[in-house]
Image (tube, rainbow, N blue to C red; front, side, top):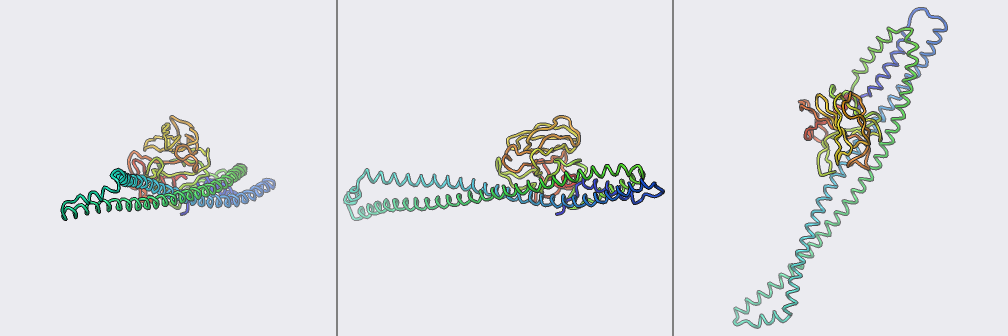
Length: 395
């Protein structure tokens, strides 16, 4: 699925294109040195436009690849959770089978101890002590029944041992499977880190190109200030209207909670096992350790740390609150504005040792009617709703 163009990249392209178009619209007499300066500026701007267009395309490609890797990592984490659930269930079966085996063995041990205490002649004495043919038949049936009980106990023990062995073999296979799944997750995490590093490099170059473009545009603004303002407004409006790909709900989150480079997928409602089986109540925004996490709207930021989420921050605004977990450290707490840094991406809590990310939840005061349904068929978990379309509008 195509991701929407980054708002920052769209503004850069619109800004530079406006300057180029402005130069093309310049009319009236100019001095030779001024014309030469403008021609040189136009040539450099055209080069920058080409560079920015290529860099924008590269960022979009890397972002798509990073999001695809984020989805794969989510799938593997789901597989690990399901496998862990099977392991726990099988361990319970093994404990039950072991207890049953011990109980049956104890019965057989009691029978053996009784046979030892009474001696091998006791059965013969018992039979010879019969007083009639009927009494003899009754005593023979009692002896046969005792022998059959011993045989049944021995057979039951053999069957229970075989059952226990099969469950232990299955447990070993599941443990190997989980090791392979964790190895796959580590490889995917390394790939994602490479993608995010590459994207950061391109974003740095894009920032430098924007700075160069800004310097040139300032020179051109003295020639056609009015045309620059008009063209910038027109192109900015076009860029703002070019949102595409994926559901998006605007007007709630005012900025992306995590600075670029980052990647996320719609993993709301996915099964998770850490701390007991539960449904994933947010979207994981994967990013390098230390990436700033920002307040998406004005409100109050409070420490919401806990065992599972580790260092966590809630930001409460007029429409509800957001929850950010697994931080590496806190930012500003208390009264915050839109965009205030409230923390930094990490892997604290039950995410320790895994991919660094911000577990992001959205808890509105009033559940909206236009709920988005995640790929797992879930719209609400507790008081949280799927934040994916809200993230799409700002990230």
